[in-house]
Image (tube, rainbow, N blue to C red; front, side, top):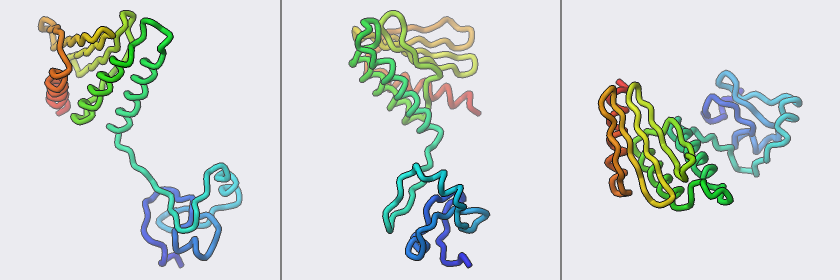
Length: 181
């Protein structure tokens, strides 16, 4: 009965496959590996969704957990840096370097545990990896402060420049990989 329907993902499809679109304006869903017509109630629930034109298919985008973390972190940075009326909020330069660092982190699939604006005009990335913690603090005046606390060792603190951020990201990623086993 449904042999002419091409294989699709096992998720709901709110529109008929191309072969069904040519013969019917009804909406379909995939259930137990087969396409079934949607009930009038299901169709009514979907009325708010934009309709596809003839020959189009609904695209299912699968987003990785890393991409979700990246998007959430980027949104947080933009929110914290968007309050330009507040003199103590991070400025555009901080936003740019923070987004650059976030992209470096994304390449290593490592993301901050926390992103916060501080009271001293900076944006803080904090990483908590088991008993280790790392902080990168971006200040409005261009300073970048890196703090590393590993186990019970004496904390390491240093002012770094943007070129050193790759090394810091690799160090954090390496620590994360060692503890992830």
